[in-house]
Length: 236
Image 1 (cartoon, rainbow, N blue to C red):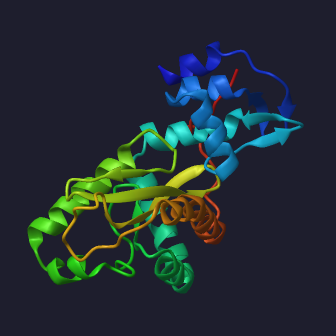
Image 2 (cartoon, rainbow, N blue to C red; image 1 turned 180 degrees about the horizontal axis):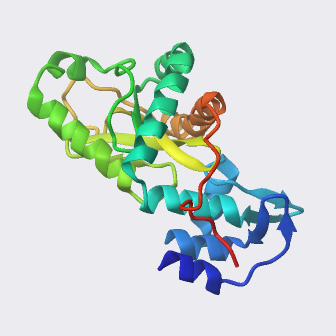
């Protein structure tokens, strides 16, 4: 269905990655509004080129993002998890320092929402209850839901535990292989648990920094194997 939608969209211009899409077309494919597309492009959340004042998006890379979101086979997930695990281990000191400076708890997961490393800079409440199997089950379910969420924007959302969390994806080229989650943040001023509390400025720093950290982890991910005939690309 999505391949048919891709073919129906008129293309504009070319670059080395193939046809180029306008923001409105990307928004249609990803089911987000155009302002969100622009914001994600500014933050590095989408593959994009700025030509003068206009953003253009390489169709092949957008197509690979769609493929990673909608058709992940078990072999692809396993390969992505291995790549995500290795890159996270290499970047662990940097991620932990960033978590401490931003005042948040950070979790690195694969695209099934399964952690690939220990929770970094956990808030006191999480540390105190980390051996509770119900807490772990709730977290895993929430992280799985975040992995399946089609929106690529970076924003805070309130999870089932009543805490706020933001997410940014890690890529292997244009494929999504994992997530960095910044959480353990109080969603309301009335929160009485020993969790992290952020000002509006602090929240802004997290939303600005998280894609940069994820980008650094992405740069450490091993290149993907050559695509076979079953790999879906966006074409005219």
